[in-house]
Amino acid sequence: MQQLSMFDLMMPPLPPVVAKPWTPPPTREFETRAYGVVAPMEIGLDERDPIEIEVRGIPTLVRFSSFFQVYAVQPPGSVYWSETGFKSFAGFWGRIEGGLTPEILAEIIGADIDSKHGGGGKLTKWWPHYCLQWRQNKDFADRCKRETTWDQWGPEKHAEHWANYDAKQAAALERMAAEGIDPEEVWRTRR
Image 1 (cartoon, rainbow, N blue to C red):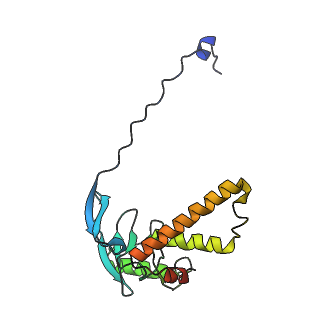
Image 2 (image 1 turned 120 degrees about the vertical axis):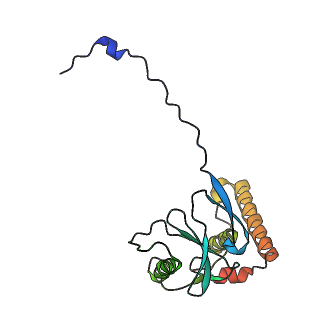
Image 3 (image 1 turned 180 degrees about the vertical axis):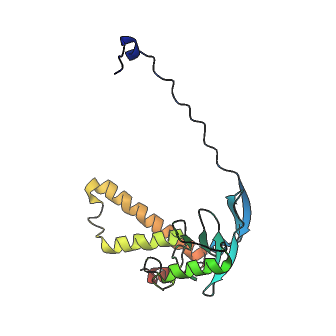
């Protein structure tokens, strides 16, 4: 047993821990066709160059970061296995022999398309985020009564929320029109 003295109780406090400021890891740019647009993508300095492969006749971009991710390379509304045009395989587990060759990648992606946790064997059309948000908001407004949704905050806030909603929906429709995306097709492809 150790005996403590009163002086031990009066020790000065420890100096505060000084954390060094966070600096992002070094990156480089690599030109890709992610989301159907030729543009530079920022990737890690030590990251393998992205590649394009074909999976079941659909071209896709593969980026090697946190195992790998895939991006649609065809324009919005094209068939893909994710309605966002992106899918991460960071949680993939399994034994891979021979490295991540295009054939192995296609096999992994194909297995995901067929799995019940992936696409269940079905493909869908992919849409930009703002289109998916427009569709989700439209679904919300179609299910909820305008007169009573958000009325708990009083008439001014109620009107403000619906005006904000209407403005965002109108902006999304304008952007879709400018980009040649049919809102009826975005709405029709909801799950």
